[in-house]
Amino acid sequence: MIIQDSRFGDNLLRLRKISGLSQYKLVAKMQLLGSNMSRSTYAKIEAGDRNIKITDLVILQKIYKVDYAEFFEGVEVEE
Image (cartoon, rainbow, N blue to C red):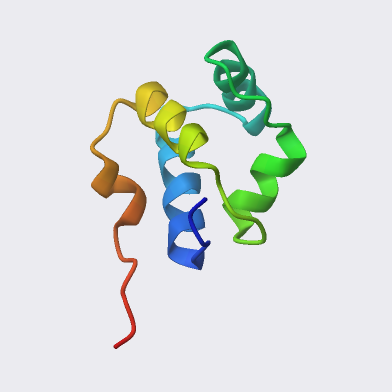
């Protein structure tokens, strides 16, 4: 799993909006690709309240057809 960051959730929201998908439609596409995520779980991930499984991130990358860096734009490491 990846530990959540608010910027990560913001990036998920941005990518979903660009794609024109509702949370319900996105999760339905994810389920067709093997995810068992519910809409409420996805909403929590997008809000930064829950972690995401790596396998679900891979599925999102396939749906959005973007580089993985898009998910982490603006996410900074504290030193």
